[in-house]
Image (tube, rainbow, N blue to C red):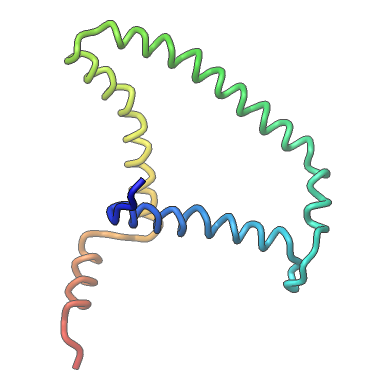
Amino acid sequence: MKFRFSSVPYIVWSVIFVVVPLILVAVFGLSTSDGQFTFANVAKVSDYTAVFVRSIWLSLVATAICLVIAYPLGFIMSRYNANNQRTLVMLVMLPMWTNFLLRTYAWMTCWKITASSIASWSSSASAPSR
């Protein structure tokens, strides 16, 4: 397969937000607070067996619930004409968009980002310094 330069942004994104955090988790997991290499943290993982089992159980239950809801809904939606299918897909996606919008507004509130602060920042950043 031929390498395409259009994939470079995705590769950079994946390296920054997937590979680097995984490496950091491995480094912190295999070192002490002093920075010394150790397997002691890995040996302590068995202390959390109940948490792992509960997490796997909850993920299986959530997967089963999603499958029980999604397959019949998808089958029902497939029986409608194309115009109604688009509307139904939009209705399924709308709660996810709402969640994204609410999280965005929550971050704006946390960081006190307003249109006036953005305008003042952009005008001060573009003004030449003396």
